Length: 139
Ligand code: ZN
Image (cartoon, rainbow, N blue to C red):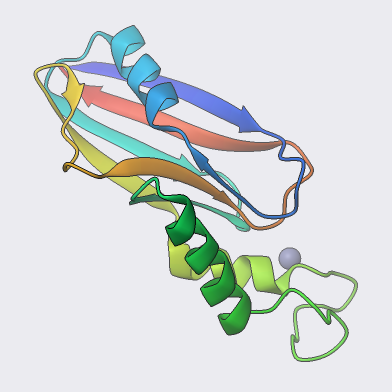
């Protein structure tokens, strides 16, 4: 069995962002040389997510509005017990609902994704360096 590990780094220019990382994960898969197996892609921070969905800008605006309704960033001052000396309670909650990781099957050397499935990095407390782990195992 082969094993491959790589960290992808992000430093978004905005507090929140949705970045399609499918091509980066594909590059990792090519580098790994693995043809059959499983790829795990996970955020290494508790205020960002990795998830799979459609690469459609309207949907990304919908995510943004929906998450802001569920867990508004502002005002920081009240509503969140976590925001004592912090301002990112909303980002922890957004991460929880959007998930920590994606797991994708590898078949014939390719990510075995559904027709419209793309892998995203969801940033909820950005403008600083953060990482995503790509772990691929198989043969
Ligand atoms: Zn926090």
